Image 1: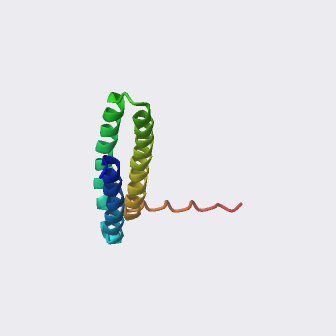
Image 2: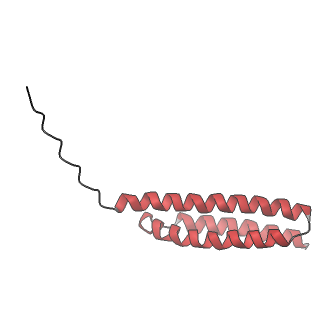
Length: 104
């Protein structure tokens, strides 16, 4: 079996396993898991930058740049979603009482 077929098989299996694992997560665990995933995405982004910076192949450079862009979008989006979800659980500030009108 060629090396490309092995890598493609690993990729396809990881997609199926990832989809199955994520679909089983309850909504109460979503925010803590997103925060942990954001930290992992930061490490993945750093790894993609390092690997892309050391490549000499044009194809690998293009694939690496696409990986960097997608990882950055995923990481920033994860932080935005986590921030919005945490705002749902924060206490709201009481509204100031409306000023009374004086009639003349």
